[in-house]
Length: 454
Image (cartoon, rainbow, N blue to C red; front, side, top):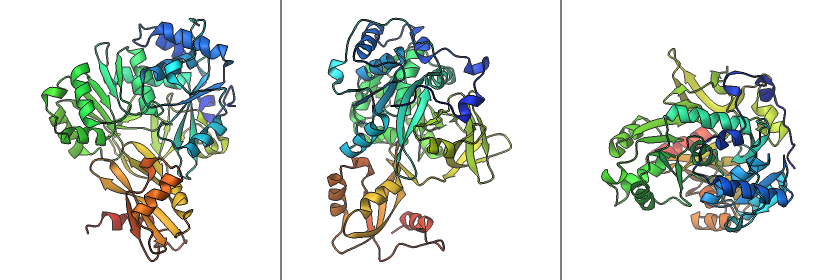
């Protein structure tokens, strides 16, 4: 059971009135507009949740690929002050069990074709400080982190992004990112509800299908890692005419450099924005500069710290919260950055050992733990390899007995019920993993080996 209220240095710092923090609850904000998300169904699903015993502060969990009903379920949770706890649709049974054990939801919705319906609840929820969602993301230690957002943090971000992107009712977003991700939640559920405009959800990424949807639905706005856009450009059916309606692309993650921006801008005929953010601090930098009320600084270690109204209030694990936040509410992003005299921000590396593949964060520690559980593997280290399509892919260096190859590795990950995108795509068997004087793996040497031409 998640605590009904949550206090952290960040919430204490921002508990004040006036300014961008003086917003209504997310449910109030979304209810003010004639949202394309069906208000009557949202009210009835909210009534159905309450009839199932869900109350304020209770968690509601589900696992599903993208579909319209997910937006209704999110909205229904917020209507009654409940906490949405979506589970990534690609999570294996082991990870799902771990998440549910951590969250202990009051209700698990197994069938989104049959959302619970009840007497409609039409009155908006007004407590903006209530927790609204717990979103799971990989931590550098390998343990998933349950990121906590309130109705206030999500309301601010939705309202601010409407202004940042100059979006209006005639816009339409194509959303292939899972709605269990902050990107899918923000750009597929909350932002379209505030403007309002239409969302076209994709259950799985397919570049040819995406081109067809952009053309048929007159999509104007799209968010995603470079891999989405590169794969569309490489698709046999791509033409400038098919994407003529697209005017704005927001792209983040590995591989968003000047070359990508130039190529995508020219090919799609759209404005391409380079964005930076995380589940904890969504979309806080665009084209090298902060947006909205977010404040950033770089500490003595070169780590980027952020503080603002959209930053999460912490994690389910209070020890993780204490580690990630300073005493006065600054969030430690785990990324290395440089800020020049003009205020332009460049992300130059990351402290966390995380591989970002196609927009998915993969903990190297988790990959290594799975590998080292194999009886033939003595030691393993996972690193990221630059990939033009996916941004990065997983490469594993292993000390192993003869016969352990990539096929055996893949079979092992399948047997352990690990999500497919976390499975190594390249395996390098070595006599010994290089070590630093401290005895830790020399990851820099392994990354250099991966980057060196054959």
